[in-house]
Length: 383
Ligand code: SF4
Image 1: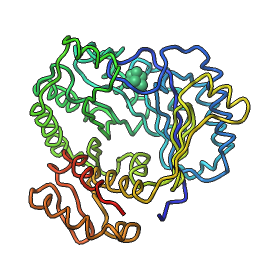
Image 2: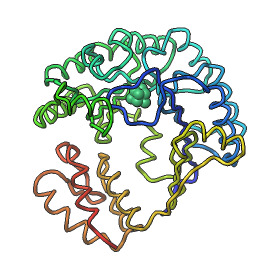
Image 3: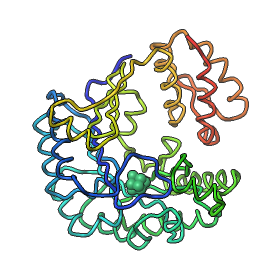
Image 4: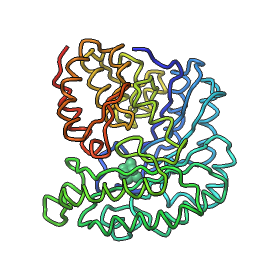
């Protein structure tokens, strides 16, 4: 597969102030050993750095905004010593509203490193936030957005969750009203809106099994998603992926390239990497990670992707984006599957879920809602 040469760099910060009830990510609720972890992360960056020019950098977690400015400066310096960062287009940090004091935001901005801030708002409704055990309230989220805009950040993304326990469509629409109020006075350029998923053994999973909470029905979810799509369209946000909406020109460069199967380097415990053929993932254990990095050998596992794996990923990621499956890429990389994809698409075209153009098979707005199901049917194709 023809791959863009400049890789992406992802850094995983596995610390959180508290565990959100729905969260199944690897993170720990304690800052113990954080300084050692930052040193280990720097060691891994040095170990894997080869001077290549990076395209984008993304600090994710966990909660990267728990790191101090000194720690972030240290990591930035090591990235700069290990890779060429002169052509980096986008540097994002995920942040939780409660960490974003005005002073912290000013210092973050003054680093002249991060040009995109992704704020985990999740909901502007305080009872929603309490139910999912978030630490912030809607006032803090609003203040963080306003302060970030005021100190100079031009590119803010906010995360919202749909389908929260007991949520009604009108409750979800309140989020849209709040965002509407904030739009003219803030630097919000991007919205990521994810459907709540219930992972096994999370606190939410247990609460649901015990009958303490209930989730909204499927028709509520569909109505929320359609309300979001309509609102975004009215406000000029383009839907460029199932869960992502951006003002023109402000899509996430980092995530968009993930979906194009370009190579990425993931550092930190639990982080995944991809070199075009192989996927590798660091083991999720902070202690072992720190010890390994000291010895110069971070523990990881890897798998060689088969042609079918690559095709399945190609179809899944492409169908989740508004651009859909590019026919030229399909022909170039998976010529044996062209006829089968074309045959499968007939049904979806007929149901108004896929629009065929000269260059692509593009999911319609309705099709984006069912992107995973459509892709799953393609998975049955064997080489
Ligand atoms: S802040 Fe993010 S990573 Fe941490 S517990 Fe909450 S959802 Fe999970």
